[in-house]
Image 1 (cartoon, helix red, strand yellow):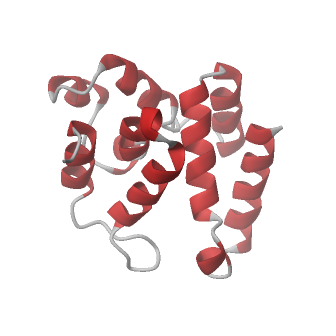
Image 2 (cartoon, rainbow, N blue to C red):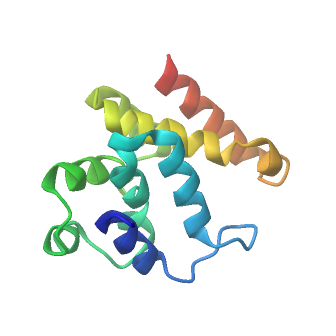
Length: 135
């Protein structure tokens, strides 16, 4: 049975594809599986504020727990922050769920079968972020 977070994520991301033409929800499934049961809802929703039409208030109105929404907001990069600043904000939060989901997200982006297909600049960014979050 799908959680409310999974239903919302699948609906919001809809027909989106990743850079390889694969349904974006496959990435969310992998991150949710890797992040662990207690982080699953956050993992399903970790990109929804950045990559879909949904806003924080929409998640709350859809019945997503405030605690989950707060972590999803933390995992959403602000447009006025660099990627490095975003990673520092996540690390400095000391929020174990946020850090665990972001690590799972980065590891998924760096998985062996796609590593050679992403630009070197993104690989470098992801590796540095992973090192920072696991330091």
